[in-house]
Length: 183
Image (cartoon, rainbow, N blue to C red; front, side, top):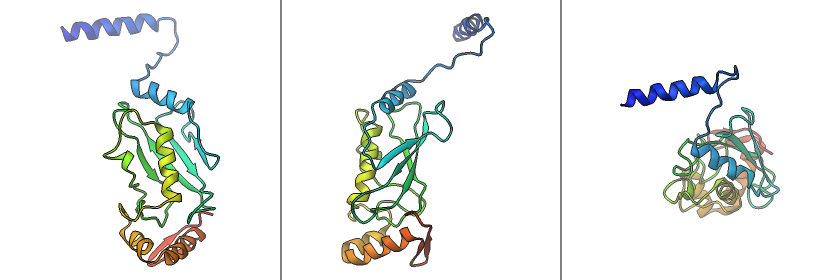
């Protein structure tokens, strides 16, 4: 029975494509939802979105955040987003491409943001995630860290933390770790 359906489906595809045009790729539910999310984006002026693989690949894109407040003011931070075909039932995969001294972002670019993990719900959207990332730069959270050293410094000595952030963003060493300039 299953083979019969596959044969019928193949015949239908061949008939549709008999006009010599390449087959039309059907969009997954995730692609349709993502297209809607992107068309409804309401980003702050400090954030922008780009599609390095072109507009045909909506499932992979980059968001640039330039905080205008807080410890990270004046920096430029790029995040890659990878969206699965079952989005919004699965949270986007987000990585920070800019090496940053931050309690909630480790040196490999993994991001600790609750809505990307246990608090993800299908009613959330890309706009919510971008605002969440922006909030990490205006209010870093030392209570839920990925970079425990940065979190400890933020908690115990905020002025030293600020100095470390400035040094890292200017292109320098914090401890044994070198950070490229991102200002």
